[in-house]
Amino acid sequence: MQKHNFSAGPCVLPKEVMKKASEAVIEFNGLGLSLIEISHRSKDFVEVMDNARALALELLGLEGKGYQALFLQGGASTEFLMVAYNLLEKKAGYINTGTWADKSIKEAKLFGEVVEVGSSKDENYNYIPKGYVVPNDLDYLHLTSNNTIFGTQIKKFPTVNMPLVCDMSSDIFSRVLDFSQFDLIYAGAQKNMGPAGTTLVVIKEDILGKVSRQIPSMLDYKVHISKDSMFNTPPVFPVYVSMLTLEWLKNLGGISAIEEINNKKAQLLYSEIELNPVFEGYAKKEDRSNMNATFTLTDERLKEEFDKLCKEAGINGLNGHRSVGGYRASMYNALSLESVGVLVDVMSEMERKG
Image (cartoon, rainbow, N blue to C red; front, side, top):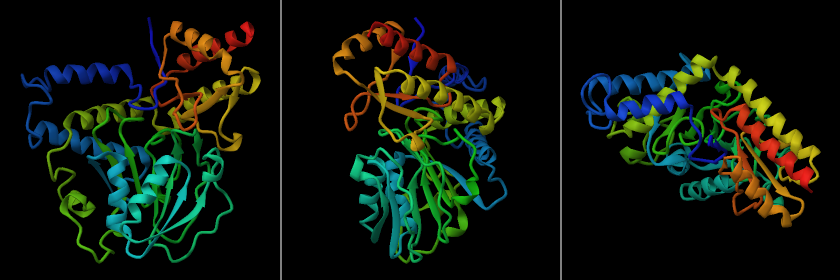
């Protein structure tokens, strides 16, 4: 039976990427060795790293604009720390839109004053704050573009006169934006790029070197840039799969092409949620995420039947996070419109049975 993978992460990946990646684990580039056996200093893997970094900048439209792309380790959780270590001298601003934003605030407080410029915590993060005033004396402003757990997404980013930092872990490469408005972007690979184990960091070099503290080498962006993202042994398999996924996206037509598909998927599912009395959306309509749709049953007594229908249809990973409950359909780039259609059919069947 075909599986329809709505997992929030690790995520669904393109089948052709999975095929190439599995072949490389057996033998890579005709070397008679596996990708995970060869030296990360070898010509064959250096080419992978260079290509992955170049593709990231190309797809984001940041080539030749003073940015560097890095593939690091430690997940977005380490970036919570690294951002503050490298950029926070006195005071930083954060928009608190969910669990991961809250965790990034906690780490930043170890290095200086943190101001919560806006927050949606008062309604369990079911909306994106608006109308907030950004202080002029911040070292940077940090946002989380998409909130995986609560199903909200920033649709309009603020214009500020300080570096703008954004955690794009769960919607990187999913929609067209002017990425040059951001000075630092980071994203764990396991949502839209590859398996867990590497994190993409895209950074404008001229924002670095402004803090007075000494930074440990492993946490210093300048060190990683100077070593072409190879300061220590990189996670070769996640980087390779990320490269393949970025190639897949480029061949598809880039971010604009995938955005069109993503909009269709989101429209199909949210239309069903709106029209079907059995279900109710969690996030405010104007802030709904195209990547993670959160919804609940209007009658919890229907849960056993709905779960049974989902299982029979091959739907996987639909359970919501414990912070919200209900269901969460993660519609990352590689999830097909067909899979969303299968889910919508099951939801419609629930209405007929009800």
